[in-house]
Image (cartoon, rainbow, N blue to C red):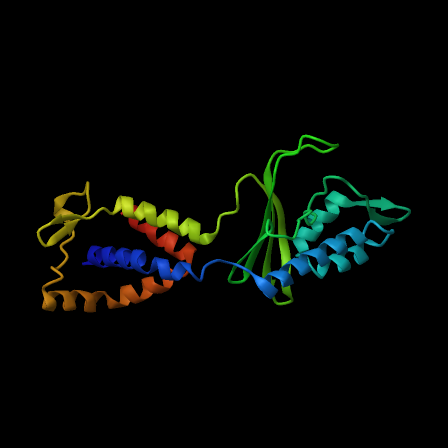
Amino acid sequence: MRQNRLFCCIILFIVILPFSQQTLAKELEGSSRDEVLTYLQNAFDAQISLTEKIRSKEEIKQILSTYFEGELIENYINENVHPLEGQFIVYGTDFPIYTIPFFTYDVKTKVIEQGDERIIYEFFPASKDGPVEYDEHYEVVKMHKTNEGWKIYSIENETNEPVMIEDQITSTVDKVENDVVLQTTGTEYQLPNKDTSNQLNIPNPLDIDDTATFFNQSFKDLYNIYFLSWNYMQTRNFLNEYSMK
């Protein structure tokens, strides 16, 4: 019976997945997108202002804290802030580290939102001319909502386009569909490559009484898996636990 319930939960997960995916990630447009890009430009201006004059390290942290998380601020200071005349300054560079990228802020700049997370990225083709050479890559900025509002917590270069949670779930579902291949034999269904002594005996859907009894017993599990489908990490743990049995 426990296997029957687990099997039914997996089937329900696959059925409701297309509907739940619609809320997992979306590309922002209009005023919402403009708001995010303006925030990034202001964060970039804050970093640029640190090149204009010497300041105390405390003042530098205060300026950055409006837009950036504490750990990222520390990384930025360690890489870019230099002592000068008893205080500190940031020198200009062609290839800054932990600095808002030189986004075009047009259609090439993608703004994705997933709940309390936002990912802003843009593809940069390879450059072999000029003082700085680099391979094609994506510049990625990640921010999340905190008690103090939205804060940037990561600035990275990535070889591949950032993967959204919905893409990760799709890959997981593909794996489930490959692993849990239904073999129809009359009114019984069984998992392939399993000992037939452990095969799943699911009632014939046309048998109303048996089907009603089965789903009544499994209702609690079905209700729980509905919410698991909205939380990828919990769902992945669920599937991993199943694969180990």
